[in-house]
Image 1 (cartoon, one colour):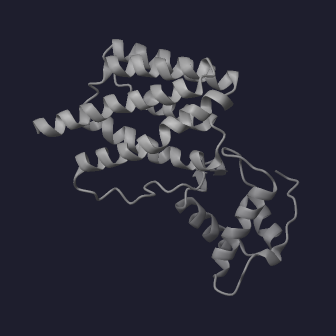
Image 2 (image 1 turned 90 degrees about the vertical axis):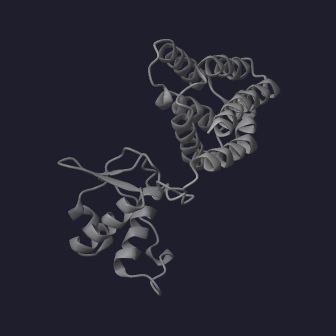
Length: 239
């Protein structure tokens, strides 16, 4: 982190932004220019102030703003790090205050129908051997948790996340949190009743990706979502 690459300070517009806002954008440029990744530690406050030629109070203001945007995170006693959240808002669609959680689950499932089968299809072509092994391990873990009647939501989210990341599409990478929120809401509503179907359809998706069968992966993911939709509608009709 000591060898910080230079960048053109003129790229930052100062006409409408406060010094703190400008400094936030300059820190972002430093991150991009130096190719720092999630989990990397930023230079300390003093070094950043020297590099950017601003006061340390301005650096603190800028860092606080970037923390609020999920770009940075502060670890007590350790320093400031690039957040694993990658600047993605905790609630990008503003769904927190939606009252009708059943309708929200159905609507989010519709979005998943639009994108996840295609993501699985692309993953069948682009996933590396290491990524496929990760999916396989997650399938095993999910199945074990289900058979033990243990909560499996976190691992289910990891499985769908692994598929999305293996598509190598940068936009899809930013859609992952939306997919995850859909799964989380769905699992809460359904009380984890899709156990057998989850095991079977996850395996079908995984096997198609392993076989590099893009059409099969698309169809398997679609079937997985069909089971989810059927379960949600059944709960709504009973409720």
